[in-house]
Amino acid sequence: MGRWMCCLCSRVADWLMLLLVLARSSNPSTAATASPSVPHVRPSYSFGRTFLGLDKCNACIGTSICKKFFKEEIRFDTWLSSHLKLPPSYLLSYLGNYTDDAQSWRMVDITRLTTKYQHDRADQRICTSLLKTKTCSLEQALRRTHRFQKWLRAKRLTPDLVQGLSSPMLRCPSQRLLDRIVRRYAEVPDAGSIYMDHLTDQDKLRLLYTLSVNSHPILLQIFPDVEGWPFPRYLGSCGRLVVSASTRPLRDFFRAAPEVAADLALQLLAVLRSMGTNDLNYFFYFTRVDVGTFGVFSNGHLFIRDASTLGIIDKEEGSQPFDGQQEYKDIFSCLTVDCQSAFVSCNSIREKQSLVMVCQELLPKLLKGKFLPPVQEKIDSFLQHCAEGLADDQDVNEAMAKLAQLLKPLRSCDSRFAYRYPDCKYSDKY
Image (cartoon, rainbow, N blue to C red):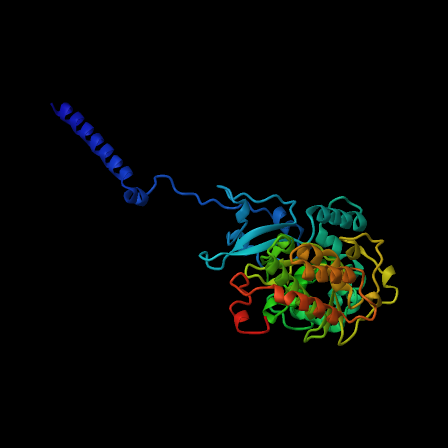
C-alpha cells in the first residue's frame, strides 16, 4: 500500500511539473524571465596580435585605442556573425562602429597604413637588409640603425632627423612644423612640449615608423577637425590600425543629383582654397589625388579622407631643403617606396598643382552631364582649360572663384545638407 501511494505521488508530481513547464512556455513573459540551466556565454571577437599588428610593435603606430577593441567598444559591424568573427586581414580598410557608453554608436573607419602585402614586404626588407635574415625582431633591427640612434640622443625633432623620408609631408620640413608634430603627438599621454623628453624610446620608434610609412595619422593629430581643419577626427590607433571618424568616399557621389554634385564641388574648391590660405601660413599641396582622397560625412560635409599624399610648405619660416637629399637614403626611406625613387624638389611645387589635379581626376567625374546645356558647356570648358594646366600667369584663387560663380546658383538649401541647414535659408554665405 505504501509503495503504491509512493508511485502515485511520484506520477502526480511528474504531471504537475509538466503542466508547469507547458504553462511557462505558453506565457512569453514568464519564459523570458526563466533562468536558463546552462550559463550564457557571451560571444566575442577572437582578437589576435597579428590581426591588429601588435606583434610588430614598436614598428607600429601606437596602442592608444587597443582597450576599445578588446572591450568590444569598436566593432566591425558589417562583418558580424553569431561568433563575431573578424574580417579578412588583407583588407586596407574596414567599416566599424564605436561607442563610449555601450548605448550610442557611431560609424568609424578602421584603416591600415598600407596594404598587408606592402607591410609584409617592408618587414622582410628590414630583416634582410639589417640582419641578413628572413625573419627577425623588427624593433631590435630598427633600433640598431644610425637614424634611430640619432633620434635617441636628440632633445628636439629637427629637419636632419627626417631627412630622406619618403612622406610628402616631410619633403620640405620647417622647424615649426616638426615642433607641432612633437607637441601634438596623440599617442603619448603628456604631449604639449616641443622637446622630446616626454617620449620614451618606444614612443620615438613608433613616431619615426609612422612618419616613414604613412603620415596620414600624424596629419589628423596635428591639424584636428575641432580647429576647423578639413580632416576626419583621429580617435586612436592599435598596432597597425588607425581609427578615425567615418566618411563616404567621393566616388559614391559621382551619380548624385545635380544640386548635390554642385554642393560637393563648391566644398572641394573651399578645401583647396583653405589649403593655400590659412591662419597658420602653411601651404598644403597634393602629390596625387584619386576618387578616395576626399570623403563626405553623413551631414553632407566634405573632408580630406586620405591625407597620405599631402605635402606641406611653411610660408612663414620657409622650407629647409637638404644638400644632397637624394643621396641620403636608409631603411626608413624605403619601407613603402622604391629606394631608387627620386625626391621632388621643393622649388618645383606650384600653387596651382592641387587644383589642376582635381580638375583632371575628380571634378569631371562629379559634374559631367549634370546640368542644362548653357551652364554645362561653361563648366566643361573651364574644367578642360584647368586640366590642361591653366595659364602660367593665371591666379589660382581667381580660377576657383570663376568656377564657384558658375556652381553657386545650382545648389539648393534643404535638410540633405545638414552641415549648412537651416543657416543657408538666412545667410548669403551659403
